[in-house]
Image (cartoon, rainbow, N blue to C red; front, side, top):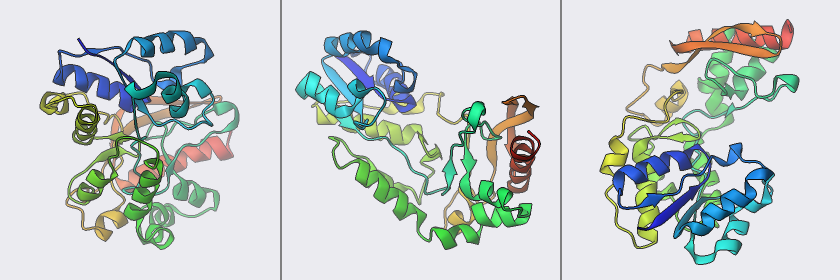
Amino acid sequence: MTKVCILGNCQAQHLETMLKLSRPDVEVLNLEPVFMMTAEHHAAVYDRLGAADLIFAQRISNEFKLDWLSSEHVRATFGSKVTVWPNVYFDGYFPGVNYIYHGSWGKLLSPLLEYHFQPLTAAFKAGLSVEQAIDRFAGEGLLAATPDPFEVSLAQLRGREADVDVAISDHLAERIGRERCFYTPNHPTNELLGELLARLLGHVGEAIDVTKGVAMPYRLDEVYIAASPAVAGRYDLPFDREPRYVGREILGVEGSSVKLGGAKTYDLIGLTEAFYRLYENVFVNA
C-alpha cells in the first residue's frame, strides 16, 4: 500500500481527507498543520516523512520560523519523492482582507473570526462614517485603489508557483469569474482542492477520481466573505449579487479578548457596523 504524507496548513489537512475518500487503497500518514508545529515536532515529523513513499509538500519559504519545514529543506532531505504545491491563496474577490495583530491581544478576532478589511479599519481610524467605510472596502473606492483585483491576486499566485512542481493558477484563472472558488482568501472550495489533488496524483503517475472527496460535506466554509459588491459588478459575477457574510456574533470584549458567540449572517451595513463597534471597544475604549 502506497504511503502518502501531505505537509502544509489547513489546506493540507483537507487534502488528506479528500485523498482517503478518493483512494482508500492509499495509506495517508497524517500530519498536524505546520502552524501548530514547534521545534519539538522535528524528529517525529521527519520520521513520518521518511516512512512515506510520496510527500506532497506545500510551498514554505526558507524564512519560515522552522527552517526544517521549508520546501527547499524537505526536498533536500527526502529527494525525488517530494512534490511541492503552492499556498493556494486568492483575495481577488475581496481585496484588502487581512489579519490584525494588536499587542497583548495577539491576533484580533472579529465578526469574521480572524479576518478584517484593511480599508475598513483605516476608515474607522480616520473617523469616517459607516457609509464612507463601505465605499472604501466594498464600493467604487476599492476599485480606485485596485482596478483589476483578479489579475493582481493571480499574478501573486503565479509568483508563488515559480518554484513548485504542481501549479493551479491556470485552472483558477478560467473559473474565478464563473463560479465561487474561495470562501476566504486561504480557504478554497472542495472543487478547487479536488483539482489540485488530481494534479498532485497525476504528477506522480497515480490515477484518482476525486468525485467522493469533492462531494464530502465538510468544507472550509466556517467563514464566508462575499465578493465585494464593486468586484461583483466589475467582473459581472453570477454569484454574491446580494452580499451576505457568514461569521460569528460578537458577545463583547473582556480584557484583551474578543468573546464570540454562534454563527451569524451579516448584510453589508450590519457587518460594517459590527466592525465599528468592535474597533470602538478595542482601539478607543480599551
